[in-house]
Length: 115
Length: 111
Image 1 (tube, chains in turn blue, purple):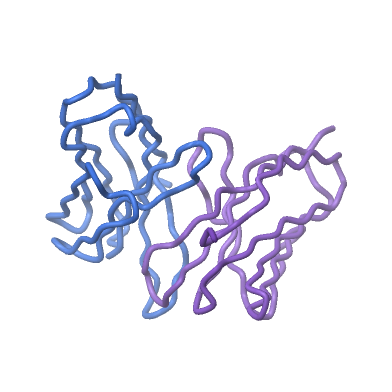
Image 2 (spheres, chains in turn blue, purple):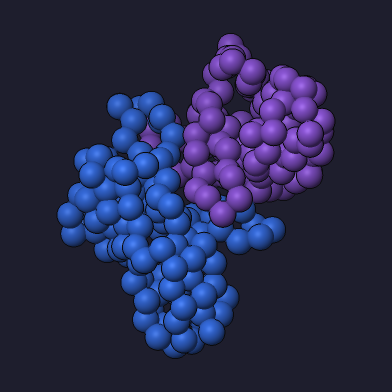
């Protein structure tokens, strides 16, 4: 979907280096999410945001931090990359009306390899 | 018990076959339910929402059984292009709280 883009699409980095992944949306959706996807585990929530400067942890948040200084951007930072953080990272947005949940729209993903 | 459980498959079926996927969820208070489709090395995409009364979209039918905490997806007249991984997805709460994903069921439709 053109409304959500992730960058970079691929990255190889060395153990111990900081890495920042960017998610950018043009849909003006309030909610943004970071998931990682690994074989045998499916999609697991890292962090999510329910508004500018409002974020919360997911089930696999250790070693990750996030920031959302404006509606359209949600950044995921690996403070000091480890090989266990080699994964495919997906950003998603949602913006259901009121109490309804209309599901997510995902970005195309970032393939991160930590060597 | 996992929050959302699916048979991982793979399901290998011939073109034209009918195939059904099942999913169970652990939280009886769950509010919203979805099926997503994910092609190899691509992002998941919403296939359909699942409503209490059941719903159909062309060859796809989704059913929800709240009493048994069970969701199903039926695909009729399978096409080669249906080959993908199908993810069962649940929202435990109302509104835009994070979704919980099953690990997916892989389908291969064979000519």
